[in-house]
Amino acid sequence: MAYLGNPARTKEIINKYHLSAQKKFGQNFLIDTSVLEDIVSAAGITKDDTVLEIGPGIGTLTQYLAEAAGHVIAVEIDDKLLPVLEDTLSEYDNTKVLNSDILEVDIKALSEAENNGKPFKVVANLPYYITTPIIMKLLEAGSPVESITVMVQKEVADRMQEKEGSKEYGALSIAVQYYSDPRVVCVVPPSSFIPQPGVDSAVIKMTRYEQMPVEVEDEAFFFQVVKAAFSQRRKTLVNGLSNNKELGVSKDMAGDALEKIGRSRTERGEKLSLEEFGRLSDVLIELKK
Ligand code: SAM
Image (cartoon, rainbow, N blue to C red; front, side, top):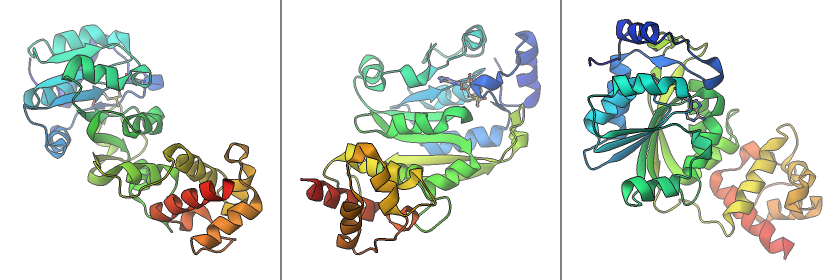
């Protein structure tokens, strides 16, 4: 089996199996060998690693991963691709394909079953319609994931890296930067895929922190605060926080908490750094007691 990472081989497979790229599953197949090489090299995979791939598609990236890693577990939602993967991965005895929705997979149980409980390196050309829920699932506390090297929409990669004060800074930036150190590896044009997506893409690597850069008293409450702060972008933080019933924070309480961390009562969420959100959430917990 020759490598798939070129337009002719990909078209051959698509024709052989009468496939049509499923829009509902975000299927855009990679056909650019230099991008495939960049992804694998950025992920820093060795034969000691077990890679978790999300959405192997027709197996293009999976072949590269199988060459570099000890084992590859690939989770694919589209059962029409299973016979294709059986064919394209037939030469690799270190790959296993699971037919599941990644959002339904218990990653901790998977690492216990397939990797002696050790963390995975996640590598994927992600389906763009569910990028954020997948990233959040992989990052959240307790997920056995060492690093995440993924293709996403360029605009989403930018948001993941943004700092306070910028227009794109939001709940996703804070979550990604709370758990990991994000770095953009390369920007990828639509011409690197079949079919071509309507936007530029980027490969981003998130290396998970062993020790979080910000310590918070209650992680779940911290994320509730962040979500409430950005749910009504044009409103002040005081309004955003007090309008969220789940938080149980009054206008006065929110204003007092902002002053306690050295900010004005009329401040907006996009001005606060990750560290300030951490302090704000801790102060709110104190005031609620
Ligand atoms: N890895 C292939 C490549 O690079 O050419 C395909 C990438 S394509 C952008 C996204 C893949 O994710 C598709 O194969 C799609 O069927 C799969 N997918 C979509 N939603 C999924 C989900 N919830 N769980 C697992 N796989 C999913």
